[in-house]
Length: 208
Image (cartoon, rainbow, N blue to C red; front, top):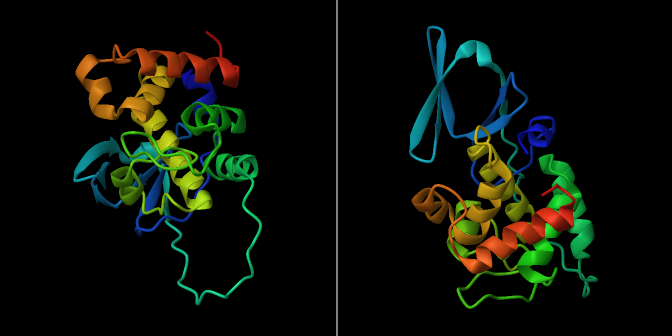
């Protein structure tokens, strides 16, 4: 499943925390906090750590767009956002197949923004509050919920990009948490997670 991800164009989009994107020669785009160049190597800093790459593997750095604060204008009861339209827009922004993101949303919440899991996951993409905070999003806002969930999926796919089970691990991490995937070195043996991973893959038409 690495092939379709490597060929995707990972679009840049605004997030709450200012940073930058490293565009790599293999087509991947990594969101980082900052970078340092030392001779023929470059260090990419993110999440309290860093990774070091040959400078030749980095095509360029792109500043992260942070929308300016604006004064809200009162509106009269706007029509609720269409979940599938929000998903299509977010998938396009972040370079993921819309069918894939839609399958995740259906498996997570049935496309319902009012869905709340027993563990506290919120909205269409079922974001845990701490995950939403990490992504700088308000999980109660449908547009932010879908955008943040799609960004998180992309980050997990990048995290496992060199793994032969990239797609299954990314989906399992989205559903059960990256810690569970690391603990079991793969899809954790939770019946709910196993069924979830297979259902998403089947619905998205991504093979067996």
